[in-house]
Amino acid sequence: ISICGIDQAAGELRIVYRVAGEGTKEFSTYQAGDHLDVMGPLGNGYTLKDKKAILIGGGIGIPPMLELAKQLKCEKSIVLGYRDETFLKEEFEELGDVYVSSDLGTIGIKGTVLDAIREYSVEGEIIYACGPMPMLRAVKAYAAAKGMEAQISLEERMACGIGACLGCVCKSKEVDPHTHVNNKRICKDGPVFDAEEVEI
Ligand code: FES
Image (tube, rainbow, N blue to C red; front, side):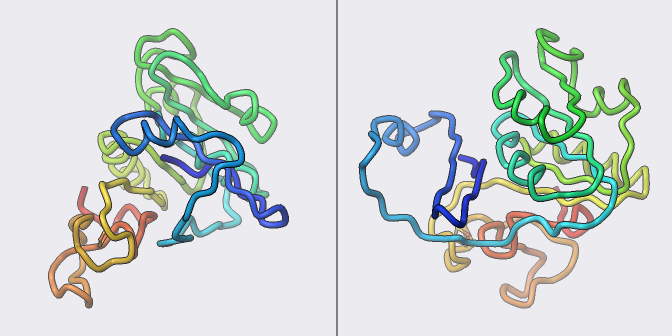
């Protein structure tokens, strides 16, 4: 489930989701005009910096990059990793230079988002990324090797969403003052972390 657009004036959120279980299956039955209770916003978001940016989205981590691309006014490159079919690509193309990779090579280059970055010599001073854990691990390693700042948005199954149940923790570099162990609660301390802050 990803937030893809925010219109504060209209009080609207645009959400993109993939049907992956009972909850999202239920989403798919909702009709325009249905009423839902929504708790939020919860957690943090990306910290916008005025630095040449590389936005990296993989799979269902692609949609959040759209709102980020709108809000970041600096020079930016957008790297999108699809499985086989594209979505939202045209909307991204209105906001910056777009580079695409896909698992099967059906669109863009065959391989990962990092293969696309290398292939197209994409450069920047900061990375903002959202996507599956193997992709984020690779982004973290890439940023460390390049000495670049990277903000990564982690995903986890969540029960409470407010930092109480510890069901969504990941390992952190520093001891957390709340739990007194090397933990970060993705729902409350994140979901966006400096890549160096978390062990993934
Ligand atoms: Fe309960 Fe994060 S979901 S602490």
